[in-house]
Length: 105
Image (cartoon, rainbow, N blue to C red; front, side):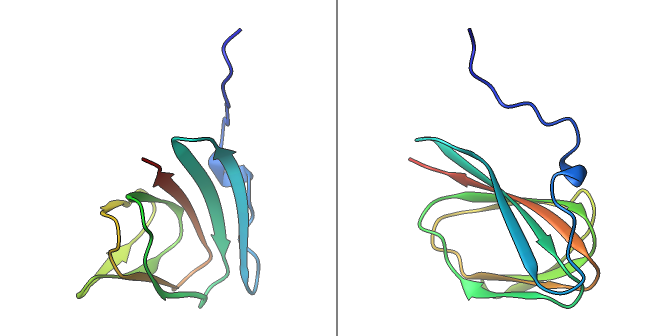
């Protein structure tokens, strides 16, 4: 039997709260950690780094991100790959749903 995780609609896994940030770990093994974030409008994930490569996939909403020295916009469908130790932050404009994939070495 093959061990797998099947999610038919990520948008239904976490509802962005009216105020605050919700997280739900969808998968975690020695190679990958997948975390779904639900952000209320106007929420901020302050500047930080990750020690491993990461992918951000925006499923719903609009946000402004800092990536190193750059400021970029994100909306439904935005996909970002970040190398290890890149300073980054997220500021939401609307309720936002974002999938974070941490690529373990």
